[in-house]
Image (cartoon, rainbow, N blue to C red; front, side, top):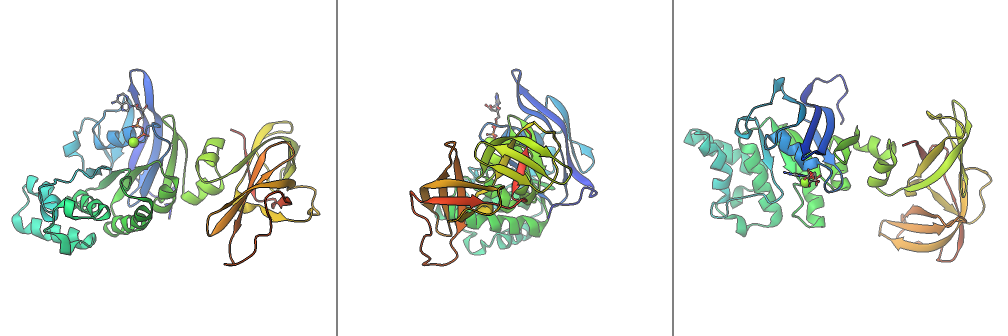
Amino acid sequence: MAPAAAEPAFLRIQGVVKEFNGYKAVDQATVDIAQGEIFALLGPSGCGKSTLLRMLAGFETPTAGRIVLGGVDLAGLPPYERPMNMMFQSYALFPHLTVWDNIAFGLKREGLARERIAERVAAMLKLVQLEKFARRKPHQLSGGQQQRVALARSLAKQPQLLLLDEPLGALDKKLREQTQLELVRIIESVGVTCVMVTHDQEEAMTMASRIAVMSEGRFLQVGAPGEIYETPASRFVADFIGNVNLMEGRVEVDEPDHVVIACADCRHYVGHGITGTAGMAVTVALRPEKVQLAREQPADTYNGVRGVVREIAYFGSFTVYHLALASGARLQVSVANTLRHREREFAVGDTAWAHWSPSAHVVLTQ
Ligand SMILES: Nc1ncnc2c1ncn2[C@@H]1O[C@H](COP(=O)(O)OP(=O)(O)O)[C@@H](O)[C@H]1O
Ligand SMILES: [Mg+2]
């Protein structure tokens, strides 16, 4: 889904900085976003996501850098002159207006002809599947329906860019998961380019074509969800996205086609080269679902470690075993529960061997 690098950039964010009293809330953000992309800004609270979104919308002025949309530099354009719309977490629907009037509000202010407004509102109601609710007031709708009205209102003016700040933040977990795919369907069907802010990595992974992982105002990594999950570029990204085992070690053997990394509890044979040198300190990242459990010691002297099962966490479709290793470190192993009534192979207190393949790890140098 991620567009090729050759695709022309529609939205260009170039070296954008925002300082508040000398503090850099956004620090040198640079990325090109293609037309029709759903691009997510992902990071912990306070990392600068909303500030960057607000600069796109024109509510904040960058301290440095440029924002270019469709070839036009947006500097100096006030929010209402920008061809974009921002939807907030609170939806900000007018409580005294019907669904129909909420969606029509911006169109009326634009001075659009009455028939045009009626057409557009009807199309929007159809898009978000709320035709039957046109005469209701916001308080007569569920949270998910209110969210769809807010989206319809944001899209009614046919913006070139849709900005979403934690769009599903007000919904409970189950509804949020259902709404994620629904939102993607709507955004893709109108073809609008979208930049969304979220602190929820699953939401970013499910919805976005590409993600920028942010920390302290900076973009740590930009990539498709699969890239960020499978080949994180740093400890922060590996740790922030999904569950991961991180082990400190040193490069023992450094060959072009493989490296060996010695850690406190085991030695890793990594089936590819790294940009590093023998003796260098590195971190090995290993996802729990890439580790297998066995009763017997594997024949291979690499990529295996003995541990004692200390905790078993059942998640329905999978179970996570926490092994205590000789150094005191913990290793998490995730096992898919493919058979409904399969007996658990390991119990708390059991000794088990964890093992993994030469392509299971990612070696991190920063
Ligand atoms: N108007 C402002 N004045 C001063 N500091 C601000 C302002 N807006 C945001 N900040 C600070 O900038 C940082 C990033 O905030 P924000 O962009 O809202 O983060 P996020 O959306 O990632 O949670 C925070 O430390 C926040 O306190
Ligand atoms: Mg925010």
